[in-house]
Length: 467
Image (cartoon, rainbow, N blue to C red; front, side, top):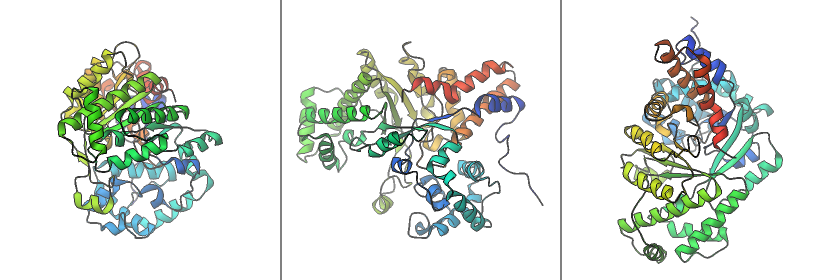
């Protein structure tokens, strides 16, 4: 008995208005993916993946968490099992991901990149593995080919200040037909409470060509690396923090705090927050001077499983949503920069849906009329980059601000197969607006609503960023 394909042209589109908005105003827009964690080395070398596991499962802690939940042994997730065995373990897991966004993403990616429309399971795992792996070994499905298949115009990866940016330089020299930029992520220089802070500062000093003994030295080193990134086309920063720190401080106190840390002595919680405040403000002013966009990803509670952290290290699937206080310190931080007229374009991403309205209203405090959508409530990310999370973010932004100025979706991914998430977001957006046209909450003026769709999917980001 044949069944209707799961991924159809009208996937997630529930009425004719949603379909018209998607097909006429969203589908063909190029992709500006302004924040991700793709490896620039693989872009520079135009990597040809040997099989589907290498491009799809390696590094994807979304899939890893699902497999662990199903009782899959770590050998078949991050261990020494063969690539084919790991794929088989994932394929067996997929039917059990119903109602998790992984079920949607899995089948959307198989359809869009490989024309595979069958539901993945252990029954067809071998067939899909062989079929897709063979396709991945063709020239048109190298890294560059995969990006071009999804109409990707711009990719912005994320690098630490000590990065040499050699691969970005190679990409620029080779002119691959896709704009590839980087975002400066200096969190390791901010998180003075980390155990390995001093060893990192030594590495930062080496990359900047100076010995860092004082807070002034640290500022100089960061300035040098920022300038180096700027010269190599960087126009964004990104920070992944629990929340924004804000404690009053004096320059003398910050100097003492830094010197205390460099001596290997213990800091108080108050001193730690003072230092983080000082360096965040210093960086914020520096970004403003260069016209960069600053991004703050807030609210993740990281490395919860100490046993597995010790075995596998960070970013391996042991993080969750945190419930940190956000509003007061974020307000003070933005206000301090704004009071000096040194608040640059800013995107704030929220991981706790309970804080959506906080973020949606906070941005309105600092949109000063100088730039359209200067301060943005960023798209749903990590645990919230799925249909429900997207709709909640879109609704909060619509109710408290202007969705028409929103710069739209990003992948925040480590996989070259994640770009259908832009399609997923666009379908969710068009369906949300299409339903409201059908119910009479929005006018049946498809040019009016369609312009908003096109702007959110592409035009606003094109105008906002200066890659």
